[in-house]
Length: 365
Image (tube, rainbow, N blue to C red):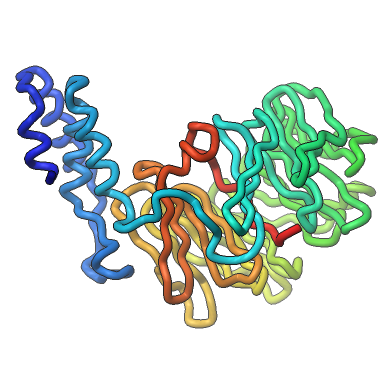
């Protein structure tokens, strides 16, 4: 049954129709122009009209809920797999949200690590650090065992860095940046009045980059000695940081684009509407905007995925061959390879009943 026939079966409700058309008109007025160039194959292109129908269906009374579900499927990637049967590459995906923290293995098996709404990997993916507003904990991803925990106020943006045998964990407590050893001891203040942006560890070092309260400077500091390594000034407020795998480049995402600091100076990539960025293990840099994924590689900045619906989250596979992002409106994860595109549906249902955030794709155990 097509969408039109399903709509015809919905009982007429004049008030609901008026609300629906009001929503559609507002959505049309705020629409984002889509370039005529097709980035993915035509069978994956989403109809703009489906977005308007989704808005209208959402405004209908309860008898229209079946239509909402049908339209939601129509705005996703066509022929998406009905469940996350397996990852398209080796490794383990970490995801967290209202349904708790989960580890998804390459064969599609899933392990829930608890009710934690946020998480990230430790170096070499030996542990997971998970947190809520009331504290943080180090967890074994294979068995779900909690190795240590700390109760702290207003916790956010926890990250684990260092070497395989000597690690540090950083976290924000309100506007203070604190550091604790990888065994949960020695909790101490590193910096006050920092921006609410996740600090990042230079790979295999005890060096941490964070954003000052103004949002216009990135500070690089030795977390053990407190020694200042560098201060990078930026043109716009920073909302995202990332180190390259070799530790030679530090990227700062802003509303105006990306500034990459390295030994050769500063590189600027103009890309407005940036939501997230991620370095691949091979050094390629991926950028996420609300409706597109782009990769800055040897051939310059290339759009590898474009959809007329909002995307969220970005992670590289350990072999640098795949990118994964989320399409929450369709409840799908989309995996973009060099010459392939694979999508899986019903993600929320499989991972605790709530749309999860993508927290990283790590090597296998």
